[in-house]
Length: 161
Image (cartoon, rainbow, N blue to C red):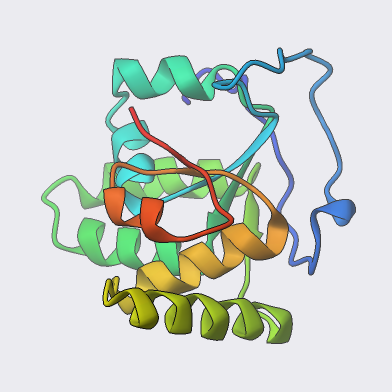
């Protein structure tokens, strides 16, 4: 992450059609290579800590998106850290180059659908994760996360590391 090889722009968009590619790198189309992906809070934290296995995945991604929910969870965590200033500086630098996904009216439809689907399965997930899943489904993007409960959500692909 700190080498600046992954680029994206910060916008609020109802669809990924508004995204502008800033990188000219070509990426393969194998099952583990994605041009665009959404990061969950645990992926953002691991990226901040330079997790080598995560760095390998992110090196193949041209555009990363951060749900506003993830930013809130991450900021809550770093507010309690003794390394708060370092993490805040790292996050600010990342946000200058990253897409932030806001919750919008279309997102609420996906949220309601996913919530009902999981209720029928009797497999609820945390509310914040419902919003993250709704953004993944809305933008048709995979999610980089260690949380296996996202695998219960139809229509999204979770990428673990």
